[in-house]
Length: 274
Image (spheres, helix red, strand yellow):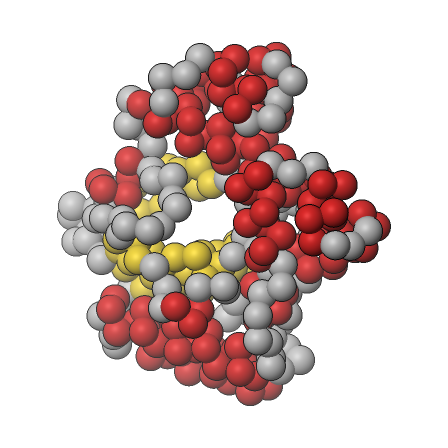
């Protein structure tokens, strides 16, 4: 189930695995895009799913919950990632907006490879004793809670991170929204926000780990994915509406980003495989 107002491209596995997507409370919306909740299934009826995850400069914190253990994983993507997972365990996942991982978690990310961390075993938040302590308390408590209680606990933890790190706003999110809505080239984006292109490049690299040109590419691919699913436009029409020179340029860029052609993607999604 996806609540209204969430700009999400769903996988067919969401319905199959009984995943619910929820919006965050208003005061966390500049940091959190959405929450995923999935109840556990009995081992005898559990299924294994495979999903593709696409980079958009954001990140995820996922809590895989069993009756005896909670495994917390941080995932930030620079490249498309295919992962398999089982419905046996409860799942509570927070999708973070671009800029949130650095501001709230102190994690420095880059644009070369995917970053996946087991948060309980890494030196996550090693410089912030209070934050580390609160995180371990959260992990201990999640196994005793239902998913709704767990979601509230995770959101409360994120609220404390906002306070501890004394961050008032996600200054990079407006850049992403401008790029996504208008598909602005870096020099156009710099002019829109009133800074030089060099300043814009530095802010994006330091805060997001990506260049403005990479952010534009993410936005183009995302819009193309939406149009391939939701319209009957030809590939040429999709290419032009997403800022590509022609269909060949679009096909090459789409394949480089998603590891499949636009037509392959459209057929796969419309067949409801995932």
